[in-house]
Image 1: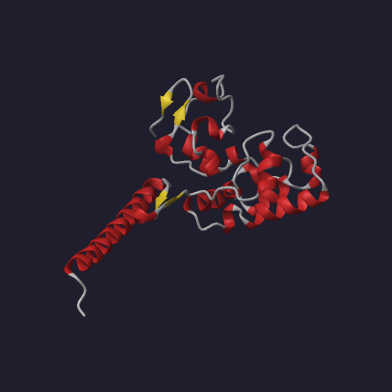
Image 2: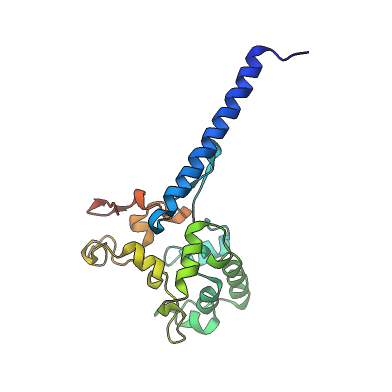
Length: 203
């Protein structure tokens, strides 16, 4: 039995919408890569995903997020995370004692290295992974810093210090969530940046 015309029209409409959504997704990806820019990817009409995978480990989110923003694993390569969660490094964690139990070090370290930038398939994480090899973050005399990766420096090189470090509501380039309002979810889309006391920033 032939399907009713209305059902056939609905089916054709869904196929058309799905194709359009995929086309938009492809266009966004191409635009996101022009000039070295990496924007949020759109998976057609049926959802979106950020270019940095959000945190999925509750222990890490609570332990590290109690002192500062819990940075997503995809912001540094595995080697850098291994340096940071080394017990000796945690005892002097950028000037603070962030010592953890042996089990927490094992669990958090495993989570970070397994989901690090160099294991991610997401575009912005890949950029952090590639660029980090040429920066001071891999020197043995200092702990890795996301803010010192080549990719981070390139993406923030036009932002004057007065807007960040001299800004009482930001204070440091490490305070990602002060300007990237979706940072906690892994959304670092530069078109949604709003700097406190200055408003939207357009690159």
